[in-house]
Amino acid sequence: MSQSSLAKTPDNFVREEARRSTRIERSVPLIVFGQNRMGEPFVERTVSTSINLHGCRYPSRHDYGVGAWVTLQVVGLNVEPKPPAVRARVKSVHMSHSSRELQQVGVELENPANVWGIAIPPQDWLALGETNTSMAQFSPAVAPAPVAPPISPEPDEPEVKMEHKMAEVATFPSPSPVVAKPQPPKLADAPKPQRIVITPDGLINALQGRLQQAAEKAVQTAVTKQVDEAVGKAVAAIDDIRQSSVREVQQLFPTPAEGAKLSSKEEIASEVASHWKEQMEKYRGQAEEMAQRLEKQAAELKRELARSQEFLEKTQREMEPQVHARLNEAVAHAISEFEGTAARTADRRYERLLENTQALTQEALLKLDARSAEVQALVQSAVNAALGAFQRQADLQVNAILSETKERAASALSSLDAESRAACEARRQTLEAEVARSAERSTDQFRKSMKAFLYSCLVAAVSAVDEHSKSTLEGLLKDNGKSLHEASSETVHPDDPEIIPGADTDPFTH
Image 1 (tube, rainbow, N blue to C red):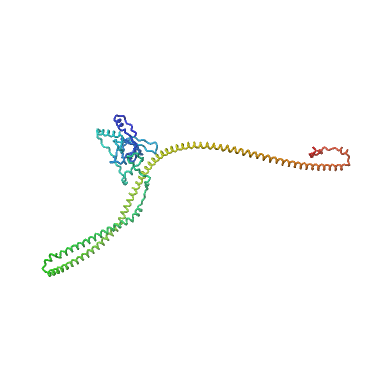
Image 2 (cartoon, rainbow, N blue to C red):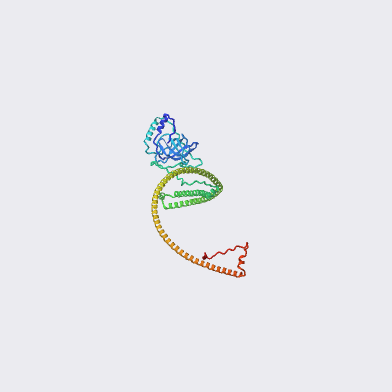
């Protein structure tokens, strides 16, 4: 926990020295009540990251001011009695470098104490606690600090548990075996609040059958109650008359002791007969009167029942529109209140859910980033190691394969060279034989063709000589009249073409 800068006065120096106690990295669930810089009250639920005898540090998403007072309530401890709420002053606020991380708030308790539920605290906690206790005996009385007033729910919002009003900032795993780990709220299973729209007509239609049944049941109950009361009164009157008649009959009959006193049976018989006659007459009159009274009471009861039924029907007819009107008013009022309350509750729940979701998303992203970095480093190292081993193994295998391939290629090339040389030699010999045979055939054909050509040339030359000799002979015969001198003395015309002797085509003349 970072300490705020204070003037180095002796008093401050003593307080700063007294404030130093062993710090423990412990996750303790906390509920923080306070006000932000805008003066707006807030309640949030968070978990401490480190604690000591004089204060703690915890993550928060609210904007604190250094020097502001907050109230801390430690929850989730299985100790009795429950630790009370304590006041603390904000001493430091460490802003996070990333928008996904929450700021770290350091607070100092107003009265240093082990309010964190540490079963075995460090030795300096105990020593500092005794020092604080001894110093408190000589310190002047100080008025108790005002306790933060509980936040009362809004008038238009139904009362809910305080835990639902707390903005859950983060839930970190608690390494402490002593402190009970709080159950984090299951936001993933919480249904998403939806706005319910209910119209008065729909509600009236939905409640019409139940309201009609309730009205009929109420009327039937009232009629039954009045009829039961009237019948009960009549039955009670009849029972009273019957009891009075029985008592009168018992009073008229003498007891056995009185009968024993009679002197004779005749007197008893005459007395009993006269008495019975009188009693019979008397009871006959009483029975007739009773029958008349019962008839009158029955008639009055019937009239009363008829009047009651008419009154009930009239009351029902008169009250039915009023009941419907009041029911409609009550339903409309209930619908309006329900809609307003449902809308406000849904909005608040949605805001809380959104805030909690954002906080949990930020926390999950942070954890995911850390895990991804770790996984990336592990994967990189594993990949590098695997690549090195694979490269070494590949080099060995490639070298072995190359050497084996070279050997196989050398042997294959030597065998191919021998085979190709043998094939080339055989092919050369074959070609030489074929060339020799072809040359002989060509020579024979050339000789034959030359012989034929020369023979044809000879034949043509002989025929040409014969024709020339014939033509010469004929010319000589035509010119026998002239002399040889005249023929030789004839002048040659300059324009006549020069007679060139034909070339000798006979190859044998050369």
